[in-house]
Image 1 (cartoon, helix red, strand yellow):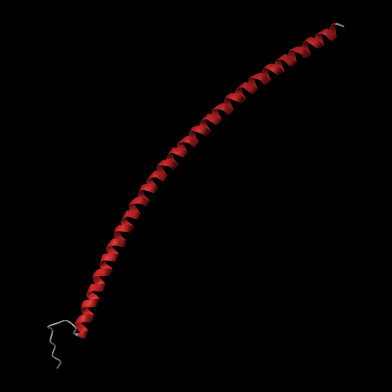
Image 2 (cartoon, helix red, strand yellow; image 1 turned 90 degrees about the horizontal axis):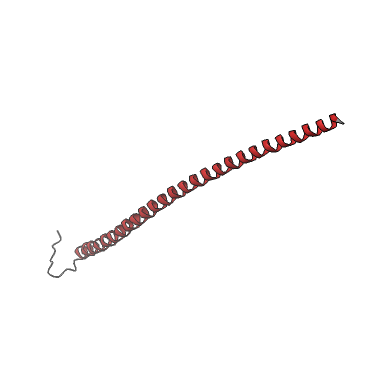
Length: 106
């Protein structure tokens, strides 16, 4: 019967050691996971800030480009009007419809 009690005490001590080792491992694992999640969330926040800054820069560039496009459209319209006026003058010169313009053909 002594060996039975000794065996029970050894099994109980081994079980207690197993529970202790598992508790330490689980605690360490929880800490590791918590640090990993914290690091990942800080990297994600940094990436989000970088993307936000990039989007703001792109939107500013787009507004500037649209302003330049509008300026070019206005300049193009002005040039088209001037070209139309010049074309009308050339046509008038060719047809001789300007008053007071006497042309002599040789």
